[in-house]
Image 1: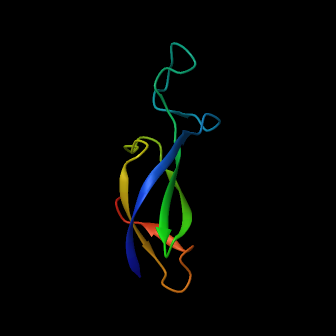
Image 2: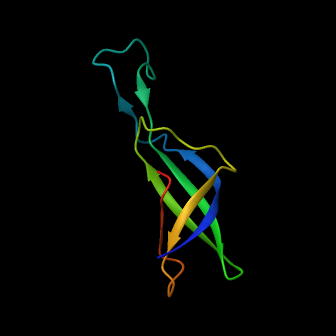
Length: 85
């Protein structure tokens, strides 16, 4: 596995998957947390690739333009994983 630096391109909240943290709520979004989908762009030999990562609800979410370390397969650079999570 080779390593490179990628940049967070987008972070989207999954509004359709609501997780309640309280047994009784005062309104619809009282005590609710949501998971996120993050998209990271990285470049290998001049070709741009994207990696999507699902982030569980309640975990810290990186902001857009944050740099992350990406490990990728030397023969198939589209196969990768994020190391900074």
